[in-house]
Amino acid sequence: MYLAIEGVIGVGKTTLARLLQPAFEAELLLEVFEENPFLSDFYSDRARYAFQTQIFFLLSRYHQQRSGVPKMLSEGNLISDYTFEKDALFACINLHGDELNMYYRVHEALAEKIPLPDLIVYLRADTDVLMQRIAMRDRPYERKMERSYIDELNNAYDEHFTRRPHSTQVLTIETNALNFVTRLEDLKQVENRIRQSLKLLPFQPELPLTGTDQ
Image (cartoon, one colour):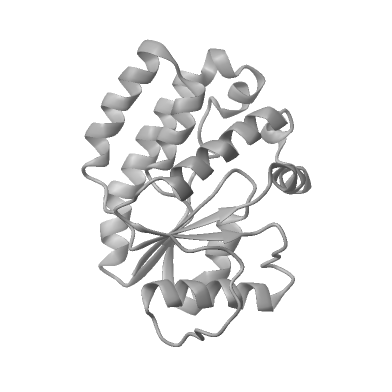
């Protein structure tokens, strides 16, 4: 079983992946974003550092998933806190013209070699909620992050994961009122919905749903 968790910056992808790991007896594949040397400069001057930031992320994610996913799946279940396709969502916002066209050519060539997950769990939240969560975790390079940028990303994610057809099944979960860390019932509800989507026993069909499946 290969499960990927997606959503905008601050929505809780990595937290949920770690919390679900014991229930599914899975390996974890976590995005390594701290190693991007352009990230801090990008949030200060998006136009100047966008291309370097995107290409670094694209190649880093490719190398991590190209070797890591098959290896981990050969040993058992896998949960990742990102998908390879997410990179193009950021690129379409941050890049323009020839830089965007070049990025798409590289992305398309690399994407053919990346294994697809069995299920994508799309965690969504309102922009104001995302901004509150980003402020609470207080990462230094995120302190200059603009609300308008997060809102633009939020709209792009919604368009991509809730309004477009996918070759992979997408489970959309509204997280505005959820707290996986402090409320065990919230975590159990998410786990149950994942089990329903993947038809993994045990699950409870009668459990109230929070979001919508796609």
